[in-house]
View 1 (cartoon, rainbow over the protein chains, first blue to last red):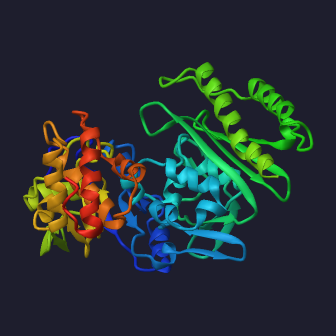
View 2 (cartoon, rainbow over the protein chains, first blue to last red):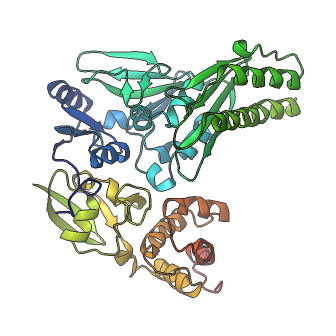
View 3 (spheres, each protein chain N blue to C red):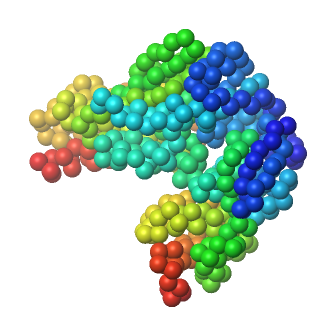
Length: 290
Length: 161
């Protein structure tokens, strides 16, 4: 059918398209270990074309209505596994969850965002993913379902390394639960010609609780989280003093990877620059408003 | 083999496809729709962009079985669309191409951007066109062409160019 060879064709597999969550979970249970779940497909098909994975079954979740929901309930935004990134972009998250909005805007391009999903980006478990650092900074949780039960775990710690995720073969991340608190936040990314970042910074500041999570992604196998207590950030003190503390902390404690795309030193400088931009954006604006 | 039912450019088609068949292959080889270009095969260049239920998507990253029941629109299908014709004329008028290989993808993407929001500002147009790459580098002319067709999408006025 095609020109042959990797990149152009997909390995052979059996395609399953369940119509309900129950059916999905039971076929996942039945083919456990031999099946991959496909939501948008942009990540999975790319891996399959390069023969990095060749599952016997591909289970599509595009016709599962339960996973298509995007709803706010009890102060939590629940994003279903099959909610496309473009749907998130056009929802009301722009003001209520600025970190997520900016992160979603940074994922690939608008055409891919019509196909890809937030949960898919998380489940792909690549160090340069945009969803994972943003979700950690917002202290989101993931609902993981399997045939007989479901569990809710913090998103932080879900990804163990490149392509490794703390979800069993017969389980699916059915929803991501993001708490809706009073927050200010931003997401900054430095990409060098490609859409994959060399370093990204997600910052969420919980205004009522006076604390923040600054998450550095793309620079090491798993993201690094920095809290206000780590840098001894004092909200009553001068902004300049706090920034100096943050800079010192980054200098001493953040050790980005050295690879073909960029050296560790270069990444370190990028992280420093992005972190300072992020705190300026989030904290200085607030001070001006007061 | 599975049978899928799709509406391609206004025509209902029943197509027999393999489970692992890519939509780009189905369109080009089974249906002979050649405005959908095959270039990178990995979702980066955007030259295989088609409109699926009026949303631009990259057909090299879609399974044919997955689009069962959808409406697919390619540059061929836009030929009889009054607004898209104005957009195409605008591309010609502004010289928005060099080799022309990316033109169908840009036309379909721009058509969907302007149809969904005729009030799109310049920044939004640039943003929406980000998914397609032009290796000749005629981005400036492409954006100018899309901007000048904007008025026609809005109120049907043809005077802007």
